[in-house]
Length: 102
Image (cartoon, rainbow, N blue to C red; front, side, top):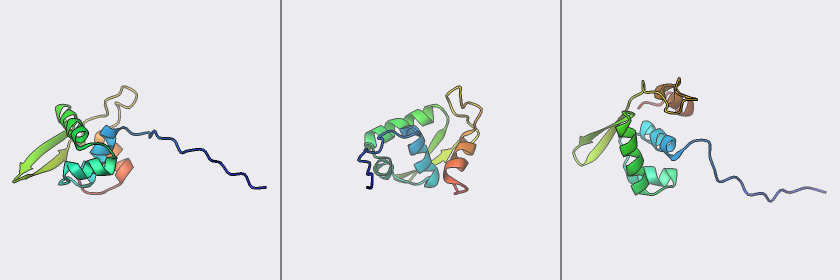
């Protein structure tokens, strides 16, 4: 007799939407926020809010290039929560996405 599990997979993830947005922007610094929203699975308005918060914390810098934006990541900034505040953004991103250019 085979046993099948009909459990649904959990809906939560270990990383926050802030981390997901940062990962998308790091992987493609010229990405449009509409595409980030599609990849992360949240609204474009939420992505805009998250990017603004990342800018306020000096993690992301937005550079206007014509009608588009280019994003630079401050790799020397550290993660914000006290438990992981010893980890630099660059080290976290390298762990998640590898050596992709940013």
